[in-house]
Image 1 (cartoon, one colour):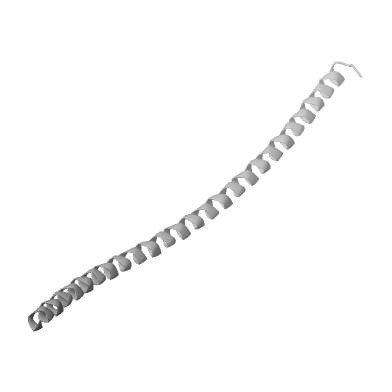
Image 2 (tube, rainbow, N blue to C red):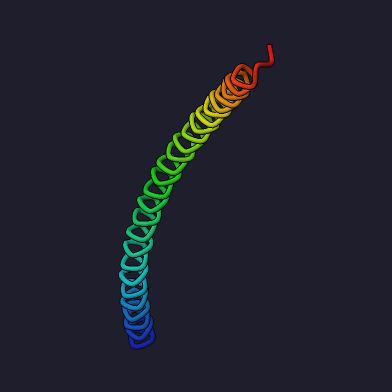
Length: 97
């Protein structure tokens, strides 16, 4: 009976050793996963910041387009007024009222 008990204790010690090794490996994997999660979260934050920067740039570009459109409209009005003034000058030179 004593020999059987010794075998059992030895077997249990072996199992505890295996469990300890597996636990150590699991702890290592958990550390790796945690580090990967932290890096992933950092990348998400960087991506969000870049999206915000891009959105701001799009807003700036849109405002520049609106400004350019307004300038073209004003230039168009000035050209129309200039053409009308030239036409008026030519009519006066021809003696037409």
